[in-house]
Length: 264
DNA sequence: CATCTTGTTACGTT
DNA sequence: AAACGTAACAAGAT
Image 1: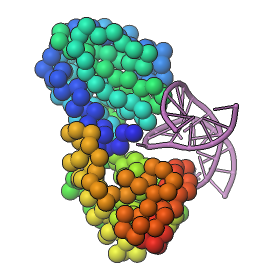
Image 2: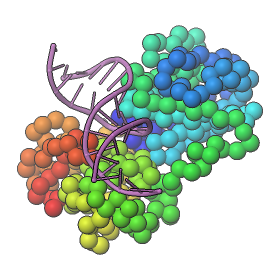
Image 3: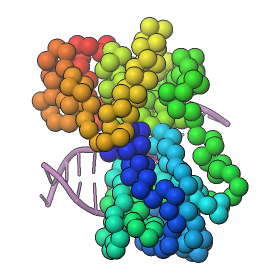
Image 4: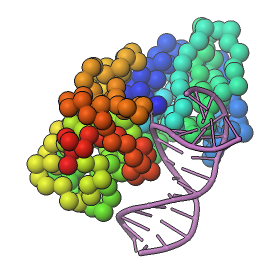
């Protein structure tokens, strides 16, 4: 499920642990979630450190602890964060648990597409610093976006919207929502959008981003009525504007839903 | 039992 | 070198 707004939501699930000291840690350390991570070092270093703050950027999260410890988390398709009162016994899919005196901070992921990264150092890990700026920041300009699309000119626009370097945090449902609102056919080649389409795409990327964060970021509520979101899941969905049947095909490797009347 | 999945990446080809 | 399409990853839901 996690796209940028859900990522923000899950990041906040660990807020009860802010300012608290870690007193224990358990990991299912053979799971692929931990590939490339020195789990032994994590086990040694975390007890005694304090959770200081956290950030989300696109679909990535970074948790900063005292003692120069940094924990990166990507939720993949089915990852979730939550906190529970202690005592807490980890279940089958609770692959990482950081115990504090009052609560347990839990990362679970049944499908194991998520990823943990661990870093020790004075400053943020390099992979974090290199992440592209948010769609809502001033650096995401129409020109930047147009440039990016030019570099992928042969790719269907739907597939381009899923590229995290250009549209960080956008996932499958957000991409469809953005294209529907921008009135752009998902099969359209990225390099062949006229300047009006580009402008609408840029505006709607930011709009859907902002609205999704507003509705989902704090508590997991659905977007308002009238969003394509509510129609896209099952066959038989209708365009919220025209009430005609939505098209439904795989584009860019993902199920894509659009209205042939709105989107040319 | 078969088919589907809201994410990413490795790999082969162009 | 960069762009692009596809398979693979793993497990649960339908």
